[in-house]
Image 1 (cartoon, rainbow, N blue to C red):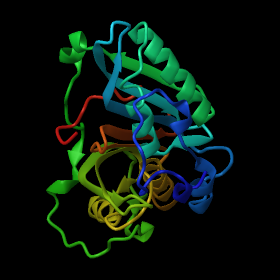
Image 2: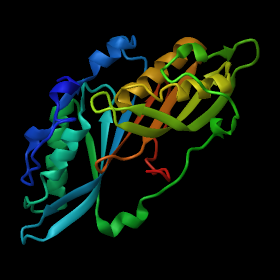
Image 3: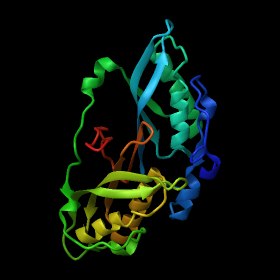
Length: 274
């Protein structure tokens, strides 16, 4: 269940016959232990996956397509390694199903079993593609700041907050998040939104901190949880939510959301780069 045991970074044979055994779980605990996440999670949330390369055959052999969305709860013991997810979705290509509901049921069953917690699955058929929305993050852009950056490994000492004045309720975002796959080294490009209530966080330090992930290796979910934990430790907000949307690779994008207070689920609208 470690990344080096997964199909990531290896030559593989692509199958077009449905095969749930292709899904590869990775234990969340190992990465959480590295950043000091306690057994009783200090956050809750969801990993939102979108799959744009899902196709199967109906009983007459005619190809069908859909855009898939998967909601994986943050408390699930496992994540799914992304290449294995791509291979799994690709295995539907030459397999016949009675209906889109049967495809959805199969995916829900398989991904739930791999993650170890109930995963919600939505499939959008072509007739509803026009309802899929695109928007940009709300809040104040940190990218407006003209500053020097020279730290490219996560450095929480860049973070600070003022606790001498009244707390603020603020939403900030940056499109300058980048990390790298821990196995292949391929770049993962993303945007991150940070909402908090507490002592005002220094904007310049926060942007430098986000940029400091530029040469860091870690899965999307792990990066967001590290950001959450570092801000909590260094800035001590009363409430905090971190939401990242990464650009797609292999027909999949991954969008982790973590919060310690009640917020509506993100609406899953695509950003322009996605």
